[in-house]
Image (cartoon, rainbow over all chains, first blue to last red; front, side, top):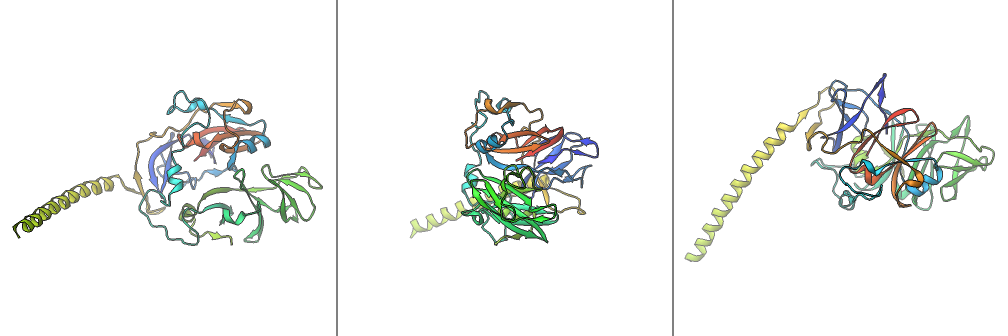
Length: 239
Length: 116
């Protein structure tokens, strides 16, 4: 998810139908430059080199859990699906990628993927802290939702909740206080230092001394290992 | 002896025809792909750009409409992408996004692009 405004110019994006590094490129209506939606950077055209600013979003979550935490949320309407006239539901569309997810095929081009630190189709949480990239395999979250980690001296909290699919990465420093988190129930966690209960969907303290405080977020995505390693070959892997 | 000889001949001729046909087809395909490649300026990247579809073959959403949460026809476990900025929250059904790839939207006064 990106901010579409750069230096006062707002861009409108379409699908170019062109592939670069195994992913579709966007084009902007204003200059017809081509942009990678993975990196947010324009790769060709008059905008080449321009960088869209990343906005923090919840990359994937069940409707139920999102709605519980954001009851005022609006939902993109089915009226905008010209491919399926008469569609009645916002989620009715056939999952055209189901076969792809089931197979071990990767990408579209014939490029070989040779970073074998993880299996190609292993699902990971991809975290980016400044210029550092780290992959957290979903399997690392067996029986828990939080991992306390440090990347280049920055203490972080990596959250992945299996039931809802929710994922987030937070700075585990609040002012000067470093916090260590443990599971509480469902997607609520507790910090050991103050015993505050935190809702990690909203990143907010809900009960205890730090109630009402918000944790600073970092960009986080859910993606296949092969795609993450392709774009960030310098990535480290959490073990 | 004659029968085996003829079969060999038939087989060889068939193989030659098939291989030649293959070669001709491959050559055309390879030529087509080469014409579609354009090499990005070396200063940034030499990864090729390959055209697979025309512009807008997949229609991005440029004027999104929304419903309130209680009007949304989604299963409880439907996967969505969510964003909340400045108190304004939007949810995008991932299955719906499969058909559009990009939504140009505005959330909390910020113009955003949701990509999938």
